[in-house]
Amino acid sequence: MNSFSVFASGDDTICALSTPPGTGAIAVIRLSGSQAIEICNRLFIPSGKIHDLTKAGSHTVHLGMISEKNDLIDEVLITIFRNPHSYTGQDVVEISCHGSLFIQQRILESLLNTGARMAKPGEFTLRAFMNGKFALSEAEAVADLISSNSKVAHDLALTQMRGGFSSKIREMRKQLIDFASLLELELDFSEEDVEFADRKKFTSLIASLIEELSSLAGSFSFGNVIKEGIPVAIIGKPNVGKSTLLNALLNEERAIVSDIPGTTRDTIEDALTIQGIKFRFIDTAGLRSHSNDTIENIGIGRTHEKIREASVILYVFDISTITSEEIDELKETFSEHIIDPEKQFILIGNKTDLMLENPHHISDLFDLETIFISAKRKENINLIVECLVRTVKLENITDSAIVSNARHYEAITNAIEALRTAVQGFSDSTPTDLIAVDIRLALYNLGLITGEVTNDELLANIFGKFCIGK
Image (cartoon, rainbow, N blue to C red):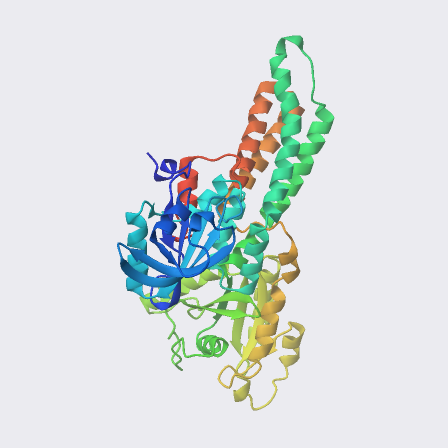
């Protein structure tokens, strides 16, 4: 039996440490379940007016000692949240104790000895979902919120947790159900040869839903890079200063810098948050057609892989030695990349500190909107930073319907495919019962997003990735 099916009813009482493991000023231990307050009451020696936690009101805090069999453990604050006005929708108790590892362990042992059991990963949020506190996509956004490491990722997760995306999917599913029910009704009267569902209106609705869902699917590439960090590949020929630029951007000596061409033989990655946006910088091996070094050739191959994966490409060249022929080559490379609307291609002219005079062909580089820098002296690095921030369309973050979850993206694309098959079925005069199968499949996939369609395996896969205590 799947472990999540065991506690689907959530009737027993669970407990876990909700703050990160380790020693700190305080730690918080959380309980949820029908006996949460009673279990704490058996261990609690109050210091205030309330002598019985079972009679305490919701959203109240109580000072006292935790003790088991006359063994005093710690002075704590106990916060009571009565159902249904709690995170899980059940009675919830949070114990704030001192952050000693020994104290944390002793309190947990006492709770287990008094009738609670240890929570599984994500079990508190699972119970919140089971009790209707969250749609499934909103519950998944909780995990994204916890793991967010930039302001933009935080804002996106918070928006989704508040239900903007799930409410949109629910509304589309409701519209589809209203018409699909008429289609199903026709199947009950198949011998009568009657039509309850207006085919023209139904086709128009499906076309509208496909358009909305396609827009959501199209937002996935943006939402996913915001969540994971925007990949920025630093590319260029050997010895043009790519590693020096990476070190300047990160403000630390992350990559080895040398005058010897081919020093960087593999990709080096590091992340930096700029104005609330996480960028993942990738320093690559120098681009050249061939090297006598087998290891360097492998690195060059990986460089091409990173170029394909990157959302932003910083093409670095040596401004002090570049020739007219190389500028023509840059123009060709530039034209190839800007055709792809998904990639931002930024030219970086490095080593301005080595220029004795401006080459006569430098005006051609201005036409390409080149950023001129000295990575060694960290001059004009701020211009690159400003350009990177401009590549992110921050106004899109305010849109309440952005897909950042791969599971949601897969369900949406499957729903689109099913709806397109249904539309084709109407056009081809396909029997109603076969069209109904496609409509059910679309409804099933939309329900997977909101949680109106679930199974133990799906829940185990989602909530098993949560941390214990959440």
